[in-house]
Amino acid sequence: ISTNLGSMKFMLYDDTPRHRDAFIELAKSGHFNGTLFYRVINGFMIQGGSKDSRNAPPGKFIGYGDPTKTVDDEILANHFCKKGALCAPRQPDEINIFKQSDISQFFIIQGRKYRSGQLDTMEMAVNRPIKKKIVEKVYPPEKKELLKKLKEEKKLDEARALADEIQDEIESNYAFADGKLEFTPQQREAYTTIGGAPELEHEYTIFGEIIEGFDVIDKIAALKTDANNRPFTDVVITVKILK
Image 1: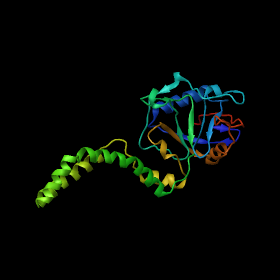
Image 2: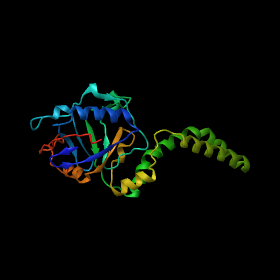
Image 3: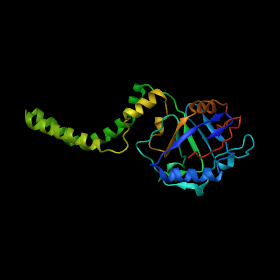
Image 4: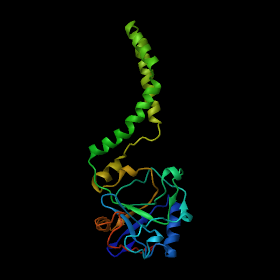
């Protein structure tokens, strides 16, 4: 991906074949050439490729995408939002419940670096409400009363058995609960060294990653922008498939 601020080289993933093949087809057709990085948010991401950005006059709102270029999602747990992740944008959940991508454009994660403690806090913010709901379901008021009664009657073996049963059920339900946030060692390494945008985890298909040109992401992200996050200086895109 070449621009007037420098070039970036990416590796496309083979385990996201729908996105890989659609992107390659569009690139070979020249679809992206002459388009702009039209949405730039420093510390977050740079987005470009939308056909309506080509030769767009200053101040024009850009980014309507192409509804004929949607691709079914390929959101995989082994790909995450580290700096340089090549991602496909999409419409919001309320009108796109299947998280289908708009492969007619793309965005590249810049993000920021996180401390390990900040990642811990993010996990807790997501996981505590999930566990709380499980506890409320598994350990309702009537079971609390029963456990209290057993303790008062000195039936400690029964009380301990009931408490263990409740705890085991809570842990079992939590282990299989959907929506938990648990960063892998690889994610923690990336987010604390090169950085990224962990808040976007599991929301967008990531179909490639940068292998050269990290500094170009930063150059583009640092540009001054208008109220729509469009850079005042046009960043013109040319995409070439190397092999």
